[in-house]
Amino acid sequence: MIYTITLNPAMDRTLSVKKIRPDDSNRIAEEQRYAGGKGIDVSRVLTTMGVVNRALGFVGGFAGEELEGRLLNEGIVCDFVSIPGETRTNIVVNETSTGNQTVFNARGPEIRPYELMQMIHKVEKVEDPEMVVISGSLPPGVHPEIYSKIIGISKARGARVILDTDGDALSAGIHGLPSVIKPNIHELGRLVGRELRKKDDIISAANSVLKQGIGIVLVSMGAEGILLIAEKEQYLASPPKVKVENTIGAGDSAVAGFVCGLYRDKPLKEALAYAVAAGTATTLRPGTALCQKRDFQELVSQINIRPIQAE
Ligand SMILES: Nc1ncnc2c1ncn2[C@@H]1O[C@H](COP(=O)(O)OP(=O)(O)OP(=O)(O)O)[C@@H](O)[C@H]1O
Ligand SMILES: [Mg+2]
Image (cartoon, rainbow, N blue to C red; front, side, top):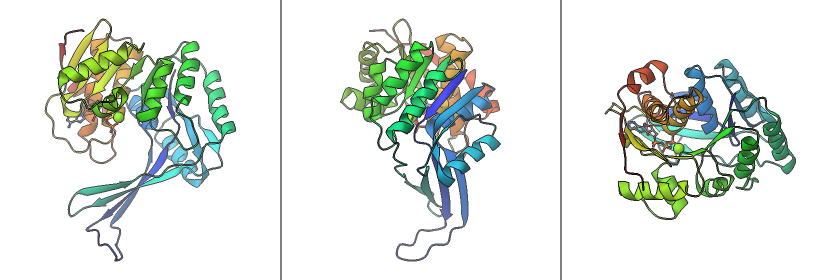
């Protein structure tokens, strides 16, 4: 079984207004609600691809109930830890006359130590963990070392672990030696402490992280695709040029594509093509919509993969 972990999920509330008028009342033309969170998006794309998985995380209050109910209606299997704090709601304001999108990210409820331990015990007990995907930021009150702890437990239980996060959570999480990490260029730059501009620089930064004991470093580079850096194989995979609608969730979809490939025992090169195809398939869809199976299937044969020089 594949498990995804989202410690700080959110309801995303999107408000569309024609033109924002400061110091005045603004009429909302349209309003949408969406159950968000990076691991949850991975679960969604896996489910779309027909890969059975379970979403773990914390939910609480009315927004938490709504989030879980919406996921159930989408056919996403959840196994959340309930907390008394209210699941956060992020606000996205779409100004339709300009196309500008402004996002207000909420912090999320504080996780108490005993709630954190409930999550740890869940990871210790879940049935047959073959792959564990840990995605996104940490909620308030949780130390960055938590990901390293979850990685350790999952690995001891025989799971391969994929970590997709940023900042302190990524640098501390790496101590747990995840099987795969998927930083984008900026996240990798923050991890190694310098800005990465040229391809060679990105490759050498990814190799330096790999040498710390990570199995595979995937560096996603937007329209340029993904670099796969492993000890014996190194490739650059690029998507064809497409008409991009919206890139929200492209990184999470790429993680899901790679997980799907690994889970089906595909060679690394093919799993990489799955990752790029799933990421790019998501960019074809407007708003928060994610990868569609048909787009993924069309794109996967069009991914250009070339070996790069191992260091
Ligand atoms: N403009 C684009 N054109 C084509 N494909 C894209 C584009 N942007 C993203 N993708 C696809 O999605 C993948 C992941 O995108 P990206 O590198 O932007 O991830 P990310 O920064 O982690 O995104 P996220 O904000 O979702 O976490 C890319 O490797 C590529 O396959
Ligand atoms: Mg990302």
